[in-house]
Length: 96
Image (cartoon, rainbow, N blue to C red):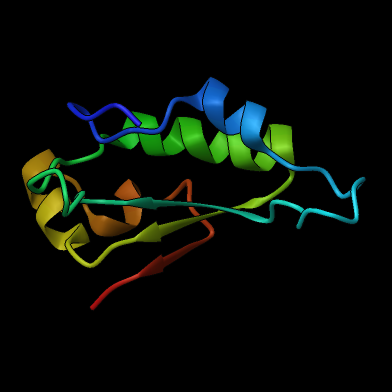
């Protein structure tokens, strides 16, 4: 994780992905990101990063992308976009 941008390194996500070929480990089925990132002081993830992570999850790994969007309305406001446009690359979003 990059402590300045609150992003996960895509190569690290690729390298930690677990296939279903070892009974000792669970297969990776989901990537979950948080927007805005609470622990890092409300850092906003840009749409380009969410889209890129979505392509990695869907196209390369064949898994889902979930956004913990407890503060997604704040992120959308900061980025001057709609929540639906911001989250278009994700399979699911939680909003509270």
